[in-house]
Length: 249
Length: 203
Image (tube, rainbow over all chains, first blue to last red; front, side, top):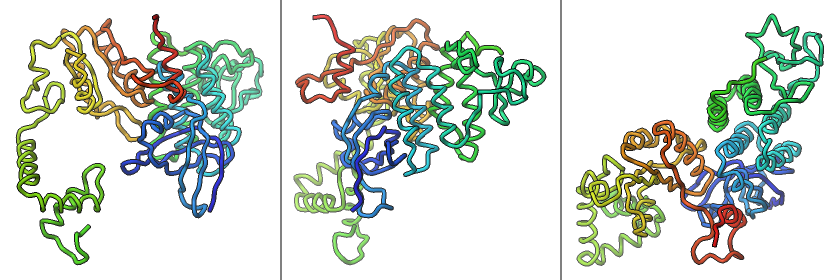
């Protein structure tokens, strides 16, 4: 009998049969892990099995290769805290969907787990937008698609970075970017060396930037492309920022 | 699935298969029910057959709100006594029945036919949102009576945007979340208590 105990964040819940569900967790030690949960439609479990909730999980299976079953207990109801706010809820669902759709199963991503936990706790604070964009950058790095915003890829001044190359994922200085403005992505102010900005328009610029790399790098081989929740989150953010447009370079 | 060990595709097996396909029933329960019906033909089986036939023939979906009733439009939509300026949006017919049982709401309903779910592939096009927007004439308040789940609230936020676009300034409300009647704090999950604290009211 294979058994382990861990803590995890609920990523998705797929109803299975009349009373059960197949639940995907992002666990601290065991990465993204799925398991069957009995009685998932009971009053107690319905509240627990909401994406974003932190749970204590005990997984058991006769053989390690099987899907196995989870015994879950609620640790912190993180989803409830953001349910009233459409943007925060969108960010939570987007982060969960990205992890659920792209992380390999049973491969430890301890850093990503704590990053996700920090993000979910930050969603309750005021200035959560830049944190979300930075979490997506960390997520890309964890998947092997690191983006370098520390120096200019074209050998320019590293103190005036304003753009990022969609090909290399490396920052470009204002002067070196001038001939290629139509091809480069804008770097949000909070990722520039001065670390200023962070308003809604700036966050939207960051979301557009990370969406490009998610779509063209991390999800390029996924038949369904970027998860619907991520797409909808950005649309909603853009809509609420309107009529303010993304920051110009 | 067969009631005996030998292969049989007779009417009894068809009945057992049909019953086993119902929610909450498996092959064993289906066999028990089939046997019960056969041993109580006059008392149970015949009235059940008649009820099923009548229901299948007469009950239809209301073309306005989506409710199930004998007439189209349904009795709720056709009732002039009900407030025409307030509409309650619910996910399914079961939710409408639940609110109607309380008797506290006297307005009109609209049934969405589900809630948005990226995981299950339920997109806005699959819900009767267009029909809802077309019914807003004369409506002053829309109550979004959707479940207190992540998917339910995502749907509520999405609907809120669409309603504001269609009728700027319209009053959009949602059901309160918190301690249920008869609920003891000690037995409630922390999510419910957290929501109840947020929505606390003056005494």
